[in-house]
Length: 259
Image (cartoon, rainbow, N blue to C red; front, side, top):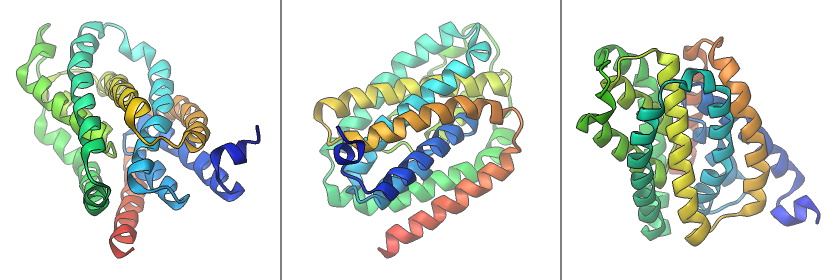
């Protein structure tokens, strides 16, 4: 079957989605916020807002997997955390995904620009938040903290509903309660993002309007981007990437508000 016919997309849109998927996967692995690239690309390709959001959740999922595979060294010794928080975030993600599917299309379209702006603000505030939060607990039972699980659950609800900026939100929650190396927390953030994405996608596959052709194009690219992004994360100045993503996200929000 012709890929373009299957996707229902023009050749230019295919290129746009492939590039956006690659970039989103890399950005999610580095700092989070990749959906600020992939979601607007799906809108530009002509998908309605809820369909674009659901398709985006499917498309970026392999990117989280690619980042998790590349970060496996930093995930060593974090099995207890991952299992405990994985259950909490999976439940939150299902709740968020169900909330999205129950929301009227016009309501979602009305709040999307503000969700993107909120994600941009969170991304901009991340360095200051990390300093103010300070180190969390380093004890063996730190991953059972009610504060940690409450924050992880709310982040997962947001991730299931929209998702842009999820990685930044999760990293802030983890840093608040866990005293550990930032690379290890970033690896755990990526794994939990994958769990949230997987739980959300399970709901969307069963009940949501997924545009499978567009999702497949972006998914392949996002896996490659996620795997490569970990290597970038160990070298690229975070402020440079953060600034580019914020500028892009603010521009998209203004465009959506005007449009």
